[in-house]
Length: 253
Length: 167
Ligand SMILES: [Zn+2]
Image (cartoon, rainbow over all chains, first blue to last red; front, side):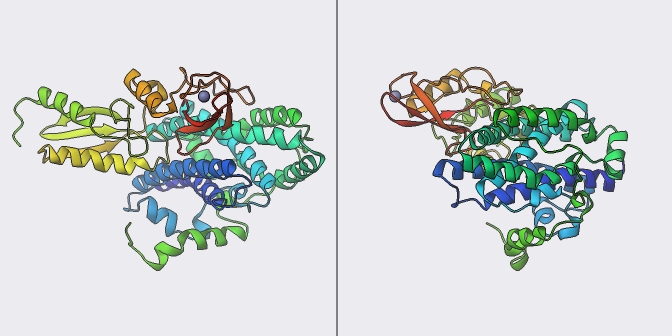
């Protein structure tokens, strides 16, 4: 597989974790309870740690001397390849829980496939490391789905609305673009389209326990993030995330 | 520093590493918590390999720095600290000494075995209180004061406590 294609492939995974981690970080100091504030920022820290490993590796593969910081802070909107789901606003706590729940269930299956199937030693190592952390994230978001869904009339109505609103951003997770297919043929990447059935089944299991109605799996789905075509939200995320290093390039702690 | 016997030097370095603490849980050292993975020579250069507990663990940079300081203070000149991700760190690597020290420090050590990653929804494990040994405890949050801990409380002595969770 050509360097540039492999770089593009790794960047997609890195950006998913980085942007979602940055989003969760916005909850710091604003969580609905102290314990949950700490939980959301713990998950954010794990995701940003995973992104650091992936970005560092992407920089090595590219071979142009870019490190994790240069890749995180000095790329612009079109260069980011995260799925749209990762950049959605936090909304209310239920919206954040649903976004996280969909992502956790996807990343768990994706890392499981990657550690078993990828021929790339470093991607395998990052997947094997990350899945242990994602297992806790998935447990946490699944517990909240049940607690809110099988909760009060108000929490049930709100979480069902969040599920219905965010559902259209889940399809993109399972799409295979040209770069994904190249990575799959090279034995490096995984076929994310094959993960969808297991994902739907796991999501449904939790929704049943939560008395949440499963949306239509065949519904029309948004996409574009993996090709660098983003919602208007990403620019604002980058503005906040990148402001300091762009204002003071080469600043050191 | 002239190194005469590499095998003995490696043994000395392992002893040295037992004095490098985890900045977040200072009763743990990098050897007994399983963060120091390997010590060897590449020609004349001493290599120390470390692995992070969690991907985002902010203590890793400090640990890497402290290992370098320990080596420098011991007189080493040609050395390198490398980080590896594979095999991924697991709480199974905490030695019995580390577990005992955690308990004395007031942190419940991990209950044996890594969690079943296949589970979606399930009951939580019973974690004995490190203060009074009661098993009448409850989990407050699966995430705690650092990446490696969950937050519990004891229903008998009423103390909150940290649990060093399994990964
Ligand atoms: Zn107690």
